[in-house]
Amino acid sequence: MQSKHPEAETASTNPDSQTGHRFVYQDDELIEKPFNWGQLKRLFGYMKPYRKQMLPVIIIMMLVGAITKLTVPLLISKAIDNAIIPKDKQLLFLIVGIMLGVYLIQWIANTFRIKYTNMIGQRVIYDLRHDLFSHIQKLSFRFFDTRPAGSVLVRVTNYVNSLQDLFTNGVVNLLIDVVQLVGIIIILLSFNFKLGAAIIVTVPIMFIISTKLRTKIRRAWQDVTMKQSRLNAHLNECIQGIRVTQAYTQEKENIQFFTKMNMTNRLSWNRASMLNQSFGPLIEITGAIGYCILFWLGAHLIQTEEISVGLLVAFATYIGYFWEPITRLGQMYSQLLIAMASAERIFEYMDEKPIVAEIPGAKDLPQVQGNVKFKDLVFEYEAGRPALNGISLDVKAGQSIALVGHTGSGKSTIMNLLCRFYDPNQGRIEIDGININEVTIQSLRSQIGVVLQDTFIFSGTIRDNIRFGRLDATNDEIEQVAKAVHAHDFIASLPNGYDTEVQERGNVLSMGQRQLISFARALLANPRVLILDEATASIDTDTELKIQEALKTLLAGRTSFIVAHRLSTIRNADKIVVLDHGRMMEIGNHDELMKEQKIYYGLIQAQYKFLQDAG
Image 1 (cartoon, rainbow, N blue to C red):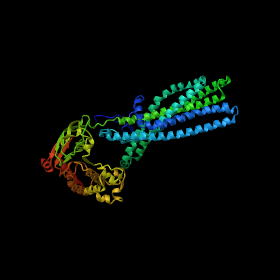
Image 2: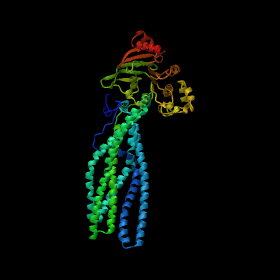
Image 3: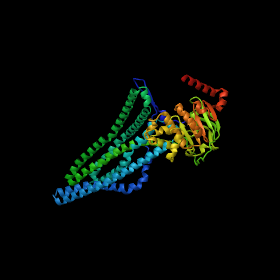
């Protein structure tokens, strides 16, 4: 192709050592970049719309919770020095009562904070997933040509989900921990600068050691996301291809390969988790050193009467509080690395630009008559291998054009260019004299109906699948088009008629039934230009005869392009275009081309011979 994505260039091959079976997958690359603060800022930009909700409630509740927590050790110190040692029960009861009130306030503040942070966090996740899905919907066919569906799916689901903890807890907890750390440092230094400084000096030592772990942890979590994407892509392929797998009895090989990928994913996660958890022991050791300094130096200061017993207990409590946020900050950093690994994959797709894009100021295509002109079209899927080479064709409104030729001759490619699923490398396409590259894509495609050989049926009712052609259609209009394509009878015979639920891809329906539904869907849209791309290939002869009768009425007044091999589908076309290796070789109606006895004549003769042999 003209432009290859890195995933297309890093295919992973995994031979099965016993069977020699080889699978190839389009893999994500390990992103070799330093920590991207710009992406982090972009990620947190999704919280901006909710700043007004965060500031008045969450920040206040956060400060109330932090202040009440820092008040408790002070009350304990006062209780020991002024109530327990002097045996003042009245003062002790008063201090205990105050502590209970402080704990109650803290509980209320934390409850409201958690409620609002979860609410806002989920809204941020909703917005991010919505933006990602909306952007993917706009990307060109080339994007999907080079990526397995599972690789796209894992970004919209798993990678976005991995950001939930960051937005629901991580950001606010980070602020709480910073406030708590600053408050504790100020309190410790103000109580006794010598003792406070001796304890706090252990913190820089811990950060110097932990810095060495950061790059390893980030790379490890990147590797986890890559393995998960690969696993998801394989799983999606296995589900989509389960019929082929079972038909060729390859279940055992598939299970073996999945087991290997699953094991690789588990080992990758274990390694990342092990590195992630290494912060815990590091902080525990540093905390133990801090306690040793506290009791060694604290005992000396008590003996010299520089501090009281209650103050020493308060110091010990504050140190416990001190290492809690330090531990969480270490976890927060690991959480941030996980989030960044996911964010890199998400923004990688969101930064993809549609190759087929509207020009600035593109206008809507007005209601067209259906005059279509192809002018000197050249198109390449891959550089140096033209799929179309110099195609020129003038189609008048209301004409039916049949495109015939061997597989790979360029028939479907012409239709893809007409719908602007791709743009030509050279040449142009005009409808009613308007270059389709100068109008909005939505206004163009809304006037073109497409029926493909591989019909896609969505999960839902049959009525909803037909209405997909025009969402504001009434039930009567849906039934009318179903009757026109002879789909009404089989639909009415189903248990719930038009409200019968069909699963993904409509597997409960026959190939012919699915094709009839796609006919009804396209005709409901009432397009000025209709494309039938091998649309009758999967329909039995009896059904095809009914459709041929319906098409005589339904195609009247519409410009139609018919890609087909069956003689019955193309012989009545106004023009038949014969393609070979991307070039237009012959053009005329059925009788004219048969008289010339060239390529078209040979195709028809081959078809007759095939039907005779089959009969």
